[in-house]
Length: 217
Image (cartoon, rainbow, N blue to C red; front, side, top):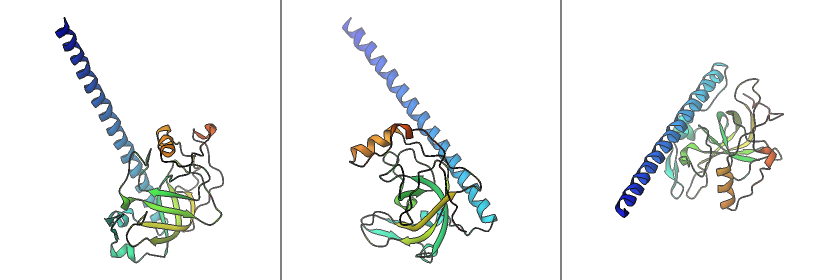
């Protein structure tokens, strides 16, 4: 009787493991599909902006960066030539330590549900600093950022690049941005890292963001 019980428990455990693997695989591939779709959407917007005559940066220049936080970054020559110059770029907003009325955030080539869970490579992250006194809400849709590019050279830099004095607008002409949904998982990670959780209960669902201005071309 005991052997049969142990065997049955072993069978149940095996089934649970298989189900867990299947669920994890479905979640992973579902996330990959959403990312691929978001990247294609961004690239289509970029192509449209370039056709309109907007001088737009290519994410490939950032993705070619080599290095680590400890040792510092090595930039390709074409990116070095843009240091301290005004630039425009399309990307997705990701919070650093604030969720509402932020004056700084990260910009990435793809959206992330949770930065702490899905840590992207440093070369894919741009630190965005808004103009002094200006704050914005995080948006679900890709945005068009304009500002002054600064390459953070040297060792032990938190970010490889910063865009200062930034202004922000919808990447698509006439689009109304919706406030970014912040997952409970992300909020828990923020609290675990002793960062301020400023998201109130009524802000947990997406809503329209008013008064967004497009960057100058």
